[in-house]
Each structure stands twice: as structure tokens, then as C-alpha cells.
Image 1: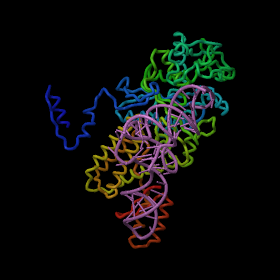
Image 2: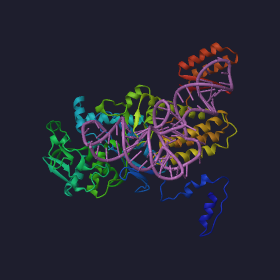
Image 3: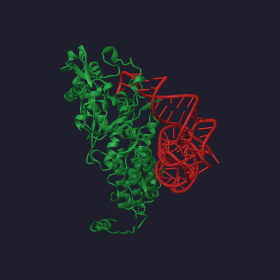
Image 4: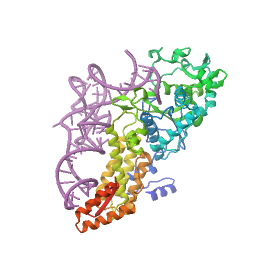
Length: 504
RNA sequence: GGCGGCAUAGCCAAGUGGCUAAGGCAGCGGUCUGCAAAACCGUUAUUCACCGCUUCGAAUCCGGUUGCCGCCUCCA
């Protein structure tokens, strides 16, 4: 095929006929035939409420932002689902060959962070610094890529004020009693993203209304007048409108735009904060620049517990730390969070965690069997297995990250490889190809472990001794050694070709 | 009340007009084995909440009913 393409380059016109040794499927799907202009990847865009082909603004670098955590307390599983999904998107774009600049905003200057710092008896800056590093640690546990920029609200107040200045100048924002509000009546399509009809929104219920004077109850806060307590602690910014603190919506909009520019590709957030948060971020960007800040708005759905949204106010939250304490590994928690479609609610239950754990363990055991395999003559099907995995996985993920279908392809691959592997059919070359294909899929999923498990000298000696005992039919002694190894966390498996082991 | 979403096996979950309704977990049977475990092979929904409509054909479209969930408010 390559030869034919090279030949074709030399011709100005003509027809080249290539006879391929198989049905040619694997050639036709390669880059050689890819229409460079058209993407095969589709995302459900909340803005248009349909799946759209993804067209980056600049093909050389995709820019994406994720609504970050408010770090007054360690984020719970519901929040982490969003970050894991964002990470999945970034990783899949990477798998597709794109370079991605990803930012996750750290919301560390809110009523909550101030209140929690107070409760913890810590100075606000110190408190949020600790909370932020704890968040980073847990993100690492969940194998979220670390090449994300994490702009912090309290370090970027200037950018926020600049944005407000622009909004006031253009008439989209107004000051009232030393707070600055966004005037949503100035935007004719406010509410379109979240499909909210403001005439039908029950007004008068916003708690801010008691505290603040706005022209319209639906206008949202950009800069919030500081309280006396905040002033005393020095948590305020001096502006020409008064001593204030930026709002969550403003912080998010400003941070993304500062890092990524006025218009970027993807805005990832949660279905529960479309209104008002995403709507307000969109409004701010649009008012400031005349264009929506992002082209694709992707929202992850909720994590549920016994049919209810996981949230602090319901008192049903679960943290990464508590699951780790229960013996679950980060990769298993990650698997649980990404193993069903991101636009569907995900129900948490102990059983679901157990399923995730078992599944990840099985995948890893499969990998260990590949690593510790006994080489054979070679299996002609290996190439096809690998091709089907890569192709099937990409096809599924291309369809708005259809993870269930993608995982089905992966498990189908495992099943097909298992039988030849068990009868030692693969050559070393086959095996390496199979492992490479798995690694490639795992560059997206990030739930598998490829490190070779090794035995300590003591365990190796015991296994050797036990084999000797078995050869001389000293079953009882052999069983005792087996029990002892089990205590050491090593499971013994006697097969027709000898004894193998795995770590528990 | 307004807007939106969901309902598929024991559990989780794809499929959204036509090939046997993917896959995972759990279970069960078999092969192997000194026993065991693992592995491998096989197996588990005549049916997709309910009623009706359209169609040659519906889990999939349309209408209705029921149940659940989210946002409109704290949480995020």
C-alpha cells in the first residue's frame, strides 16, 4: 500500500490498481485515506443539544477547560467523576493524535473557603493551600494526568477585575451598593444553554436577595461586597466600586479566558451546574468578547447514592480517601467512575465498587499472564486481534465516548487472546504487539498496570521446594507450603505445564 | 408549578426502525487437577416499566399512563 501511495505521488494523473492480500479493511481505515478535514469524533454539545462532529479551532492544539472544584473541603466522588471524565476526554484526544491544553479552575476564594478556614482555625491562604495540595494528591490517585494547569482564583483576581471593567464599560454590568452585578437583560439569548425561561423561574427565592440589592433578582453577582468579618481578616480586594470579592462564575470565566484565550474548544462541567453556573460563564464571555467562550459544552451527569444525588447537604457523600481506606485502589475507583456513560447518572453502591475492583483485577491478571507467558510458535490471528481492538475501541469512543461499547471491545479482545495464550500459541513478537495494543487503550482508560509482578527470593524458594514435594507426592507438606505462600499474598496455580503464581 | 433526563437479565450496562437484544460482575455446568485455586470452554432476557398508535417489521418512532432523578435554592 505504501509503495502504491509513493508511486502515486510521482504521477500527475492516472489510475493505480492495488491488489491487497486481505479484504483491505485495515488499510482503508488508516491515515492514508482519512479525510483530514472531517473528524470522526463526535461530542454531544449541550449548546445545540445534539451530537456534533468535533472540529478544533486550531488543529495543532485543542484548548479545554473544566469547571474546577471549590476546595473548601476535599471534593467528593460526585465531583471527581467530572474530573475523571475530563481526563478521559483529554486522554482520548491524545489517543487521536491531538495535543491538548487543559485547564481546571481552582475555586479557592468563596464563602465556603472562608467559612471552612475559620472553622479549621487557619489563615485563609494557608487553609486553601493545604486543601489544594490534598486535591492534587487525590487527583493523582485517580490517575488524572498531571499536565493540567490549575489556575487558582485567589492568585488571579487581577484578571477578574479586568473582565469586570470590560463588562461595566460595555454596559453589561452595574454597581449597586458596592457590589457589581451582571445585567442579564442585556443579552438576548441568556438562558439558551440551560434552556431556562427566566419568566418562569421562581424569583425571590435566591438567598442573595435578602443580602443584596439587585436591579433584577435574576441578575447574578460578579463582585460581592465584602463583609465586615472579611475586611477584618484582610480577605478583600480594593476596587473603584468598593471592597469586594469575586464570585464563582466570574472566577471561572476569567481563569479559563486568561489561560486559554477568549475562545476555546471545550468547556467541561456538570449537568447539575448548567444553570446558573455554565450559563453565567457563557454570558460573561459573550458579553466581554461578543463570542461564546467555548464551542463545545460537555456536561457530566451526577453520582447518585440510593437514588439521590451525592451531595454534602444530603449527607451522603463518599470521598476518595474513605474508599482507599476500604481497600480500593485509585485505578478501581477511576474505573467505577468512567465505566458507564458520562451523560447518564452513575449510581454508587458497595456492589458497584466491588464489580469495578473485580474487573480491574481481572484485566491486570490477564496482563500478568501475558508478561509471564511461555513463548510458542506464533499465532497468525494476533495481528487481527490487535487491529480489531484499536479500531473497535476508537470507533466506540468516537461516538460521544461510548465507553460501554469501547469496554466491550476490550473485553472481547481479552477473550479472544485468552485461549491461544493459555495454550502458549503466541510468539514473543505477538505478545509484545498485544501488550502494546493494551497500553495504547490504557493511555485513555488509565486503569491497568503493566509493571511486572516479581517474587521475593523467599517465595521463589518456597515455590521451588513445593514443586519438589509435589514431584515426590508429599501432598500434605506441599499444601502447607501453599498455605504459607497464600499468607504471603501469593496464590499458587498448578497447571499442566507447571506451577504459576499471582499476587493476591 | 416550569424545564430537562431516565426505566433493558440477580446487579451494572450498550443497542434508538429489520441480521441470534453487545459487554462486565455474580452464579451455574464441563475440561484440567493428588486436592484446591486459577485458566480455558459452555451457560444465564421469545424479551426491553405499562397501555395504545404508526409500520411488512418497534426495545428503538408517535401519543398516553406509572415510577424515579436533576435544575429552577443550600451543596457543587
